[in-house]
Amino acid sequence: MWKKGLAVALVAAISFVSALGAVTYMAHRNADVRAMVGDNDVFKQPVHLTGYEAAPAERTDFTYAADMAVHAVVHIKATTKVDSRMQRGGDIFDPFEFFFGNGGGFQQRTPQPRVGSGSGVIISTDGYIVTNNHVVENSDELEVTLNDNRKFSAKIIGTDPSTDIALIKIEAKDLKTLPFGDSEQLKVGEWVLAVGNPFNLNSTVTAGIVSAKGRGIMSGGSDRNKIESFIQTDAAVNPGNSGGALVNTRGELVGINTAIYSETGNFAGYSFAVPISIAGKVVSDLKQYGAVQRAVLGISIQNAEAAASNDKKVKELEGAYVAEFGQHSSAKTAGLEVGDVITAVNGVRVRSGNALQEQIGKFRPGDKVKLDVDRYGSKKTFTVELRNSQGSTAVVKKNGDASEVLGAAFRALSDEQKREYGVSYGIEVNGISRGKVQEAGIRKGFIIMVVNDQRITSPEDLFQIVERVQKGSSEEQGLFIKGFYPNGRTQFYAINLAE
Image (cartoon, rainbow, N blue to C red; front, side):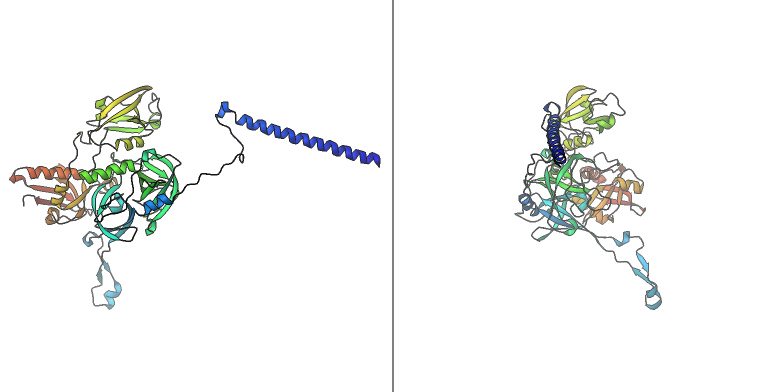
């Protein structure tokens, strides 16, 4: 019995010593692993296993920013009247009325107005509001509802389809506004709030982070004036949020919510906003000049990384690659060449073609900018005097007088409309009030192609002709307009500007 007991005790003692040794060895081994992983010569910072030295996340207070924003964000109801003459199949056949009624069986379909909604941001105490162009375009009536439920009629001051920004105005005083922030100082990962009216739910606030900057989301299209350098966030944005505010935690306006990426039409984790660096300049131009003063370099660009697959001499993979020059190119005049990669504008780093568009979009024709360029590995700097699309540095004049004489609103055809109508130019009459256009019998939706034997590609082309005719001799006080309606019917109109 003693021998058996002694053997058992001996085995237990050996097992205890072995286990203690194993635990001690593994502990030292894990310490060695952590020390090796956290080697400052490799990672330049200590690395620990999950759970070690955990610190609480910083608390972020959104209440101040939300309170600032909700009082400056408005609901916009846009109503478009439907012209029964433009409706296809204006009459419908009712068999019950035909057999049992005393009518002929045909009932005239009553056109119902189309109503859309969106959001806007008050940017001045006297009633100027910035929103999206797609919220207000083609509308006949605009109604703005403030956060305190007051309602106002609004008028369109100007629109810019290239950035999808519009400026409207209500007649009110002492309104709450949002101060402009610096969208260029936004950092990926920074908290932001999206404020708007999704699904007609007023004053809705959602939070997210900046997911990316300088994002382009539209593919295809031939509009070279299209500016896409969006702020991408994961703040929930849904139909009705368009034109609403993207706000930082300091309560500053840093973007105008514009689009979502979704296969269903509702929020799917990606939303996009026009940076206030672009939107602010656009609305300033619309208010001051009535038209956007858009400066261009006169170049076609690609992302440098994509261009490098064809141009093997490219060394810099972050920037805007100069693919070709247009007519009257200010960049070519300054000395840039095909193959150059633009890496900075006035010292601000640009890592893509979208980022270059954003930076140039802040300037007007006649402004000078400094471009940093990588030419196949050689660093160069050029000073470029920006021009407009016509190759001039002149400011586009406000077209209010010509527009008022004609009594109509016009917009250039979209790429989709050009494809649908089979044309490459033209402008659409998208609004009519009392004036020469109405007197001539022109209806909303008419596509103007040629005026006085000159092709019309933009509303500015038409306004310039009007101004030129008004300054001419008395025998030339007229416009001869050629165009068509969307149903395909060609029409000619004459307008006498002398009367």
